[in-house]
Length: 276
Image 1 (cartoon, rainbow, N blue to C red):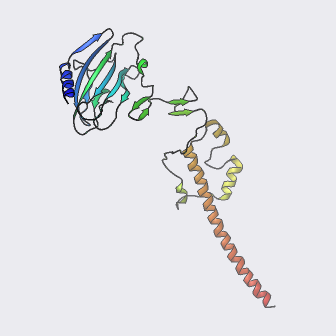
Image 2: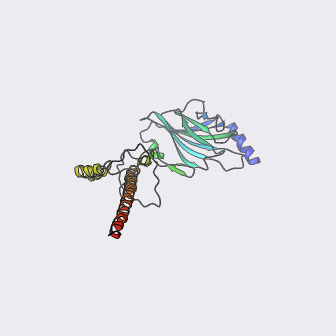
Image 3: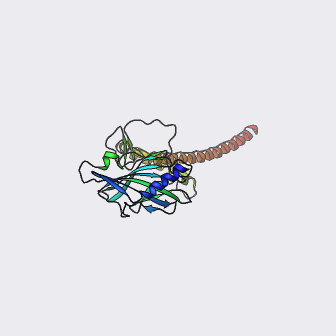
């Protein structure tokens, strides 16, 4: 307890003191925040961060009985004119753990706790006038980032390829998985609705003869060129299965009618034969 008290006293004394060494300077600040009170991360003079510089920020909450802390890299992306943050180390991302967030292009300090906590920030400002001082040296947004037990990435990922397309993940090779889940915006049960216009088998035959594939199913040429959308293709295949089910039900009804007619004809034939 005494150690924590002395630590806080030292921090308060040093609150507005900073040192500068070469191309970097150091200062610290405190923020009284919670999950709804988010405060802007400013420099030692209370001014907004310098867009030309890079910041290494260490956050800590003391005297809580919980191990809390975080380390971030903060810089302004010239291309997008927006502030970027990268979590280097997080002891947690819930409760009273101190965190940074970019909100309305402003870097802010906060926690996810309903109660307010004092977050101490130890900041190293790197003067990036020189060409060799770039965010990529420390790990920028186009590197994997960590948030608690999660990893995330701001761009597109390529595995087995250095040129991922517009997809979030491009894999050149096979994928082995126990389960794949695909979110869908609709499904094929509309086939069973009364208003659905089920094509006749004659129409199906005509389409196959003319096109060489089922209606609403891509041709071999299209698949080889564009691949398939797994969720969409499963939905279309199910549509065909449901249509086949309706055909089978209709054929079964027709078969039962024919069997009944045959049965009645057999009875009449038997009566005629017995009457001779």
